[in-house]
Image (cartoon, rainbow, N blue to C red; front, side, top):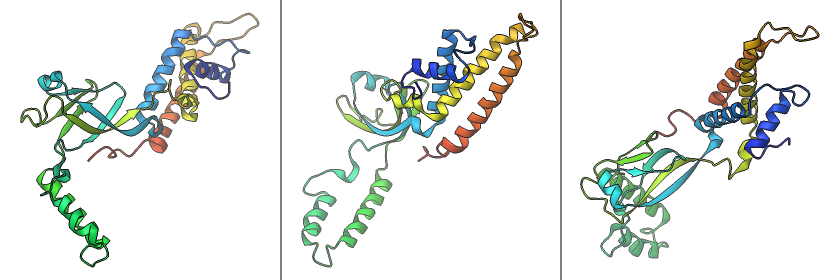
Length: 250
């Protein structure tokens, strides 16, 4: 299959690129699976197409309050921000500033007092006040623990059991659900190079051994060629496909 859509078809594609079935590829199936896992991990770590920006809603449990952290799924790569628990100036009561703004200005859009420019300026001003007076909760996501720490909110009882929080996250795209991941050009080349390197490493044990007909095994050449391909592909993903280093800052 020229367009892989699963782990099995990706492995088959890589083996064919290396010469199978014309040439026997001396790589164990378990080694092939390991190389696919390694390729996917590197792809998800650095390729901009491997993650998506989304929003996660979570209802706080009693365990969350006791632990003072929230456990997230393994698919979460980054947490960029958490929205204010109390909504800041987003409350909707009669004495709220934004409520009065809508009541008095939106209804009078035809007048110079309530025109769109004035409304936009007021929105920016209120956002600035909200940021200065309230700000967003300070969070720290420990990826290796899958834990989201929200500084001060649990200790001050600003977050209680039953409350909902909303966070902006970058989540890994599940390749088994969205199978087009397996057909990514970079991933196919990188997986092929990893399997080729494994093939060379396996044959290096028999380096110098002569087969019937005078054929000599040269596993080291295969290994070195694959290593060069891997280095080139790793440089390519960091230069051409990775998001800027400060993309998740702020």
